[in-house]
Image (cartoon, rainbow, N blue to C red):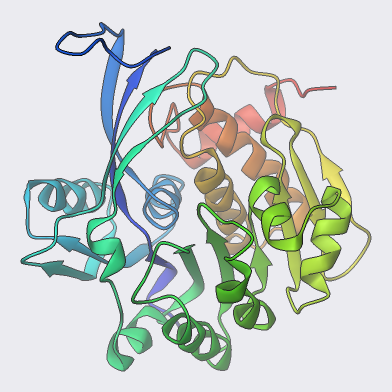
Length: 315
């Protein structure tokens, strides 16, 4: 019996977003926007918060600064019922923070202070505590300087030794990231990258080719998000398949990939098969895309299931 449905390990960042912004403000001047917000974001943070909103019992393992940003991140996670006992505080390095001007088409650019994403690591006792969940999600490889490599491998190996389900995502991947990722692949049950990230590491190819490339290196289920085109899934059992995205008006794409991963995790935690989980994940991501920030208009599990059945799909 495990204490949690999910432990999300890795990259947590405070995002400050504004919309909509076509260009930088003039030097010494200002650009007026319609709205701005702060959200818990990051490949571990946003996924964890979305899972908590969808009804899972969640723990987060990361490091943040002992500063106002860190206080806000912990307060917001705890407000949603997330266990923060495995979040360490750094007295000298700031919490990760991004400033995101969102373009009218929902695309984003970022000013990013990595902060404690570079210093985060887990000792053996913390790895054991992190594994007290049915599902272990590692998010942020490529930005976790102290945790990338052997520490990440130790976490995933220990999770599999204890019979846990492992989920993996990364951020800002390029052709050099595969050096960090490849040793992890045989210990990953569900790999959920974007097609851009996956192609960068695999050296190009169609979604089917890229998914097969990762499965050939040990991943059990490759789940490749295709932005507005939905998702390509190459499962451990059965034939690969594509699911279309919902037809929606996009406001902000920040956090869509993280929320999609949350949808996959939520489906798995509820015992759904991968097709149903991916269908639900598309709907979770569609909620996030329709408003500013990494949670968008996401509210709860039941509302999301209703939308899954009701919202139209792209052709």
